[in-house]
Amino acid sequence: MEGQGTQQTGKKVIFSGIQPSGTLTLGNYLGAIRNWKQLEDEYQCIYSVVDLHAITVRQEPAQLRRRCTELMAIYLAAGLNPEKTLIYCQSHVPAHAELAWILGCYTYLGELQRMTQYKDKAQKHAANLNAGLLTYPVLMAADILLYQADLVPIGADQKQHLELTRDIAIRFNGAYGDTFVVPDGYFPKVGARIRSLQEPARKMSKSDPEDTYIALLDTPEAIRRKFKRAVTDSEASVRFDPEGKPGVSNLMSILGAITGDSMEKIEADFAGQGYGAFKTAVADAVVAELEPIQNEHRRLMADKAYIETIMRASAERASAIAARTMRKVRRKVGLAPFSL
Ligand code: TYM
Image (spheres, rainbow, N blue to C red):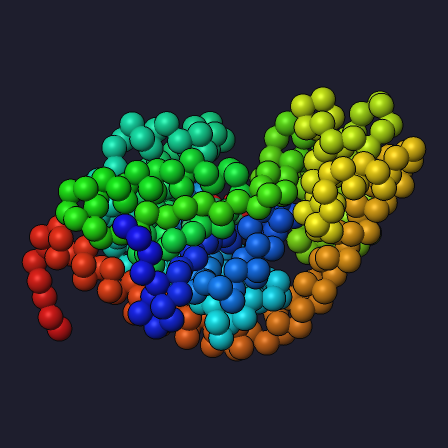
């Protein structure tokens, strides 16, 4: 189904979310958040702190609550404008869970068992292999389809989940007639898969040891130290070759994602220089990018009432959009009508 925009704005819709399950990494920032801001004028953007997703692994309740507020503050500190963009907490809009249940009845077990992230998590959390880990992508599909999103800005690791979302939407539309917009992914040209600083075969992830990732709120000293220790190779030449030189290529991608420079330009800029100067330049660029966000984050966290006001107002507006989709879905599926 073609996107029709929200009733309020007539603009095409963007939806994305991040789990409040730990420190945010430079991967989350370059793969997702950094892109979000750029889409704010052209689209009706809806960005959620997806706390229902986070409880698929055990969370300490007080910490989860605090991380929701912290992540909201990061969204704002990264420059999102709450007057244009909806920024809210997923669990404040119960329709996410409601639609997830319904869509779960239109998703095959085999599809969920094939998801690579499920397979990874099943290994990692063998002692708590709960049903939520398996049905996680259905909740993600519900998030996206609830708002009739046209575009979903995410990193490459979420591509498979987005494809499943599309399959579910197409299947549902096929059975009941046009109901959901079939969304497209929106991936950054550079930065869609930022890799571990120590094991560049792996993606940068907050669940790995600390020296493998840059946290969004790392101090400048920590950022510089981690880049200094980042794995490279013995060739001592700054050349983009993701297969042969994964460590250096990852650092080049980080620099390029921030400066907008092409890999050729970065190669030319650092021709004849060793890795020391190159790593310093990457660290400088990252520090310069993150410092203003960190300062703004600190300022916002001192004003939690403001964050809560935004969270509440956005959740109300999001609920109104979600309710329209839910009315349609309930009718199509044949759930008994009700009026309160
Ligand atoms: P999450 O919380 O793991 O990650 C949030 C976003 O960061 C991106 N990302 C990366 N991008 C580049 N390089 C990396 N190393 C890297 N690590 C993470 C992710 O691709 C993602 O865009 N299931 C989702 C959250 C979610 C969602 C949604 C996203 C729930 N519902 C609906 C979009 C739409 C997740 O766990 O992302």
